[in-house]
Image (cartoon, rainbow, N blue to C red; front, side):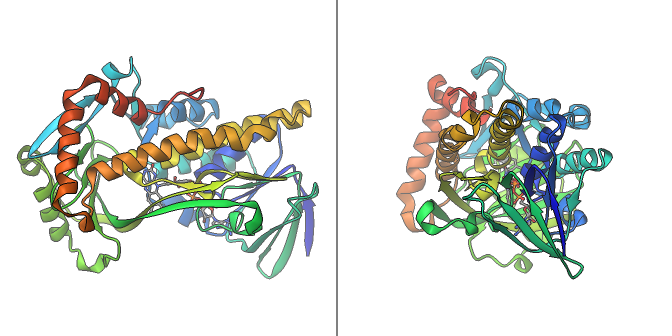
Length: 395
Ligand code: FAS
Ligand code: PHB
């Protein structure tokens, strides 16, 4: 057995854990990251694609924004496609100049992993049987095994950055936590292809056959999604079947312009809204998907995770440098104000754009009426735009 001490034990080397480790390191605070998957698995996961300005600012502040600034695609609008036509939402004009950046979560993760490795910071990959203990007292510890050896890490705080299926939230006594969940009756079938994007901006489509999204990772690599049944079987979908379905859900110009090819990745993601309250339990703090899940429609998941990490890193730095508990005492309520606003927007946008098989034809009629109103009303378009680019931290 081995035993060691650190100031902050971070569970999970996804974007939340890696960014927290980076921000704490830059403030001179020692943190160890314990991850159950391999470094290769983590670095190859394909997920989010759109970064809010608050996220890109934070990555630059963390010293990992150089490649993002070189390779990220800055977007000042996106389109809504319905009834066979596209309607542009002008983010820059409607929000007084705010923009988003298209830069894959995979690349963000790789930039954070490279920075952590270059600084010689400890990340334990392929840790097994990870458990946390005594976090409701003031001497929390983490236990895990690796290569047949049991390891114990004593620490001042534990950051639960271990995602929806992690061990941290599951370790909180049920009397101390309340969860809120909505599972949507569909999923997203996603495809990655090395072809130029069908459009230079994202297209969100509402079609009677179901939702579709045209996104990208670069000017030569595209990311597409179609709504599918919640229990869809991936091996039912050949590439040609995917491309045919996507074309049927887009406007004629986009369907004509679509450049297809062999998929380099194909996966199905379930959709849910989930929030756990509170997000702090003594010396344990939940951040990112460990505390909340949003349907990816609004491109909020990764941005919300980084919003938590921004608040948590500042609170921990304040504790270690000033011995002030103000930040950590307000962490949960500060995060949840933002979490619920982003959850509402993601739920609203998902409800507006997808087919709900059990709600009959009236649901889509009401959706089309709302879309017609939205694209014709500056007030409604502004509401859409200011939520999409991300609300300011003080609202
Ligand atoms: P993550 O789940 O990314 O990372 C948690 C880490 O903890 C993982 O590496 C995991 O291996 C590790 N872990 C779990 N249990 C552990 C244990 N017991 N011990 C140690 N480590 C443990 N968001 C968008 O904005 N747009 C999208 O299109 C989008 N698509 C998505 C598709 C899928 C399939 C999923 C699951 C999510 C998607 N998201 C999307 C949301 C996603 O981007 C998350 O918000 C983001 O990954 C959150 O990062 P983390 O909080 O770090 O959690
Ligand atoms: C993506 O590119 O993966 C993406 C973009 C926008 C979304 C969801 C996913 O709303």
